[in-house]
Image (cartoon, rainbow, N blue to C red):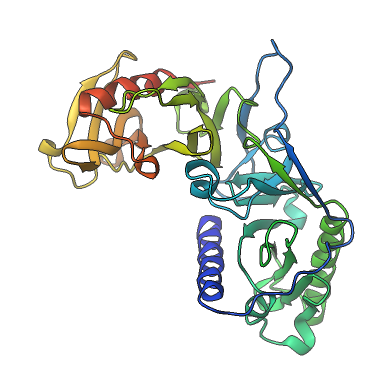
Amino acid sequence: MKKIIAMLLGLMLLCCAVFTAAGAATEDTKAPAEGAEATEVTETAETPAEGAELPYIESEDQDVYISATVLTEASYPQVCISPYSSYELFARNKKDPWYVTFPVPEGLRCESFSVDNANFLSLDANNAYEIYYQAADRYSYEDFLLDCEDKENNMLMDGSEKVAAYISPDSGRARALFGLDEIQEGAKLYVQIHVQHLNKKEDAEKAEILKKAISDEIARIQGSMKCVKMDKFWTDGAYKGVKLYNKSLPGNYLVMDMPEITFHFTEEGFGGQVFPVDVDGMDVKAYVCKDREKSVDISIDADTYSYVYYNRDESEITKVTLSDGNEWGIYVANEKDGQPYSVHAARVLTTTGSGDDEKPIYLTVQINASSSGLYWADVDAFTKDLDVIAQSVKTAE
């Protein structure tokens, strides 16, 4: 459900961006919100001292939300999101690398994060709620407030002071929109708080709970928000890899180290350190980025579904045994003139269920070079790069 909400919010912001770009009026540039800071000084994400062992971005189980896992506190130390996409930040150097940062909400744990969003859960069963943050490069207060159904009673702020906010008592949600004109005129930070277990409360009490929740969060963000430039994404060089909990896996953890890799493309010389930019349950997206001009993205997931094997004819899949000792199936998703540039590969990690209900859990890896116009000469060349990634992935306790 949380992934669906995040997807719908992302689509909403995207639609607003398209509408604005098509000619909608943009907000006038205003002074930064009280407490917000912008710096023109380029910053670099902190990295551990030389010789120190790097930590993992690690998740663990919890017992408040069904099937969700949360990151340890050290794995997501502060909210750090950008109004720009991975493509703009890592593949084409189209935008200055601006990010908005502020502290993690007290008492909440990060469930998932990406370049432009992060979702947090309260682990207090008696006070269950979640907060979702997303940055967008173009969004107007007017479009945001269109979804406020009762402006007289539910609209709290109209955007005139660089913040708009309203509540939706029927759905248990409160929303706010902050201006990020320090980064770009029209850029915004969207915040949604979803308070659970309000169904049995009276409407007036629902409204008061939501008003207090969003008002407190607005004050907290206004007092701590900063807009900064960073040469590197905050995970780049700061973590050894990811260690993700799943009770269905042997040892309960999927571990992926972030290797240094030089790709076997037809164009020589592209490579670098792999760094994660998106972690959500058992799904990971990572990048190798060179001078913010070219990049290759690597997606990894563990699931009973695999893009390699779903509705594929055997003739479409190339089987290879890699140096990790496992048989992998390889499916070329996209190619040009016989040269692949987006390829999926999968192997069986373990099985789940029993008897007729037994299903394989696949580890699926996609390596995609489409954003940079890079190609492998053939599947054999891709296999050499897959082998490096395969050796970095394992299950562990």
